[in-house]
Amino acid sequence: MGKTVTPLVAQQLLAGKVQDITAMDFRHSPGEFLTQVQMGATFNITKNGHPVATLTAYQPTALELGAELRRMERTSK
Image 1 (tube, rainbow, N blue to C red):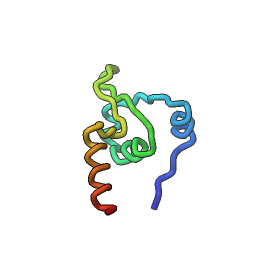
Image 2 (image 1 turned 60 degrees about the horizontal axis):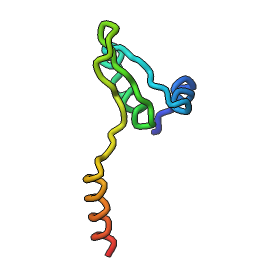
Image 3 (image 1 turned 90 degrees about the vertical axis):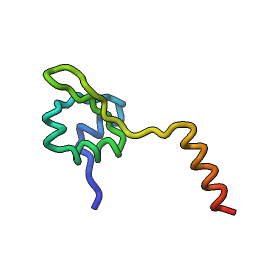
Image 4 (image 1 turned 90 degrees about the horizontal axis):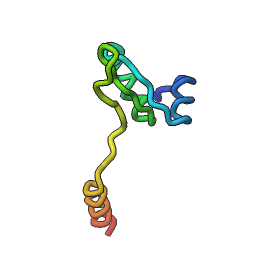
């Protein structure tokens, strides 16, 4: 079953905004935040009001992309 994006998150995704969340917020609902990241959201995680991490979707390196292309070419022959 697919997850739905809240109107606020949808608006932030369209605007390309990064949302600040507390470490406690993330600790209580990591799956919800990870689902939103899979849909394109980015979060700054703060602790005691100070940014400590950025939660964003994984971006493969050029080396990884090249390896994947070579793998796809081998399997398509």
